[in-house]
Image 1 (tube, one colour):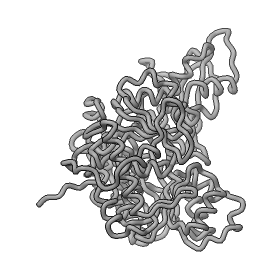
Image 2: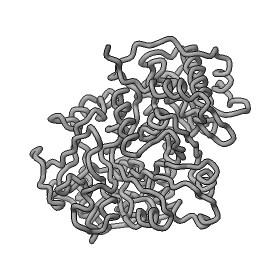
Image 3: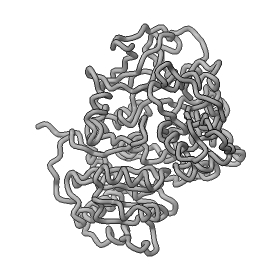
Length: 529
């Protein structure tokens, strides 16, 4: 009998075998795997009572919380599809995503219900609004999720006949245009990614993960599934704070965490590091941007913790490559091991990565020739939600085309050097330069502008704007940045502005962004951070 690969299996196993093991620690709350399963069952029944069924979309807008972890299992348990929302976005961004995906029910952390209330009148498909918070009355127009779930009967929900190729989630990514695209991930995509997560990060039953990574990011990179599969413990961190991170590592015995380089920077530069009695040696998995080799060296030699680098995209569930010490490191005959490990790495299990030229042929494995990173795997997305054109453009000749440019060496070790796509990645967040430019063009003094990513030690890279002012008009850098902050999520706003007389263009009038970027990246071999 063929049994489909469904993420529901992960919690089922953990609760069956280890019902008394601590599953989730969130502030003052501690839930065992038996508790976790019971809360998931009650949430699933509450969704059914609201008329949510197979194929319906449920979105969640929340920082990291036990509610978020519960949604990862309750929503697919009834065959519905989870739409995680990036809480850093503006209300207008959420309006587009919720309407585009046809969300039927919204779950929002109480801190963010006001964001949804701003756009409530424009949400055409939403029928129910649930506020997630531990204690206290819900805001007007919202039903308290905790109260609703407590009213439900225990026990599992009626079985739903699911296929492993059914949708599990729709994760929106900024991509390269002003409109985000909905990445359709299936049960199979995420199930296989979870296995890779377990294998390459060495996830064990006695692991304790600290959730510094926002859970909305590509379904937490697979952590909600991988950690649960082996019945490890999730320790929730609501906001990134150096003191709180070290307190939790010390008190909870944290052994593992995922993060963007900016969070790693926070950890390395926390001034009271030696004031904590940390008895574990955590493994830190980093992605979103290649960290400086110096970060890796400091983490491992100064603190004695372990570094793991991965590369992937939301579209690939997300793990494509892994960079850890292996036998090839010695076979290469020396060199700086930390520089090598700052690279994207080699194929994950079950992933075939190729670096292809414009004709679809592999470039030489000489660590010099540049091509596009392309991948073939069971982790590759099913497609973009209601966007067959974008799907066909991304998946061609059997490969998913990432838009990232790289070299590779004779061992297949991939080194990302630039991007084809007009996208900036800052602290792990995709930023569409076209979207930032669109906001700046609304400024009354701006006649032309171009936005590019520039190096940043803290964030990897940040947007910077080149602006041409209208004749007779004036504006300061501070004014333009403040204007952007009024119209964009703050992480998308330019870190600085340069005023120029004209932008470089081709003979056909296209702005030559590669020339603009050259000023900021001159002397830097790798044109991404």
